[in-house]
Amino acid sequence: MPNLELQPSLCYNLNMSAFAPVGILILSMLISCILMLVPGIFANFFHYASGKYSRKKTDDLSLFFILGVETMVVLFFFLIATILWALPLTTINLNNPIIVWTLAGIFFATSLVTFFLYFRKNGSLFISRKTATMLINRPKTVKNRSDAFVFGLISGIPELPFTLPIYFVAILSINSISLSPFSCAGLIILYAFLTVCPLFITHTFFRTNHNLADFLKLRLKNQPFFRFFISLLYFLLAVLLIGSLNL
Image 1 (spheres, rainbow, N blue to C red):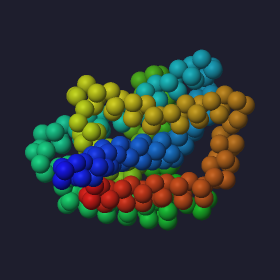
Image 2 (cartoon, rainbow, N blue to C red):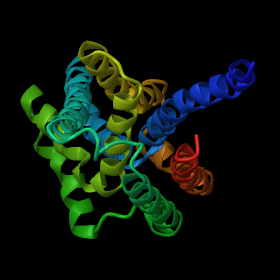
Image 3 (tube, rainbow, N blue to C red):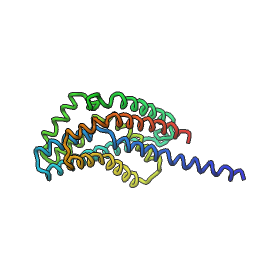
Image 4 (cartoon, rainbow, N blue to C red):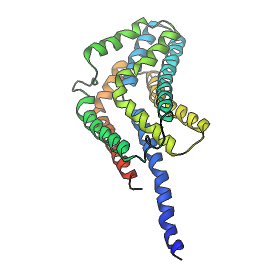
């Protein structure tokens, strides 16, 4: 009889412990999907390409830019995963309070940084003027698929302070779900695909008779919402990480 009385509590703990890594992974995906630097770079790239090349070549270059972005995400995922899986699983996981509290602190800090520093008053983002000038001028030199691919590959580097912790906690979450290596690889590729979905949306936006000025105007108009929403997601991620210790 005592065992029967403990059964509901045990089931609850199992369900909640399974929910935590899934919830963390979903929040990580949402943040990756709505960060705005790479879509802004892609919009500028598409603007220059469409003014210089035919529609067919512009779409071709855009596809390889997007492929470069997705490759960058997958490479960072597999790099982090390789490092983590080479370490003892007893030390680097979501059951380690030191790891969880460290990540929670990083996400709390990132939430504040995002709210106050990610966006500037004129609608531009946190990157320096020198970096912004380089990213604005780079599309003018893109002539072929390899150029577009490399540009996509490096476009997310300035945003790594915001994305690397996300990739790290996402890998820990995937590892906590206890999937097979093949399933883990598939989930990482799915994550990367969802990350580039905003680029396909941006491409569709331009192909529906909109231009770069419309894109910038729309982003400036929605800036308060994204400032609040991205900060909130980082905050919720930190809270969920701390809450997972008690599950």
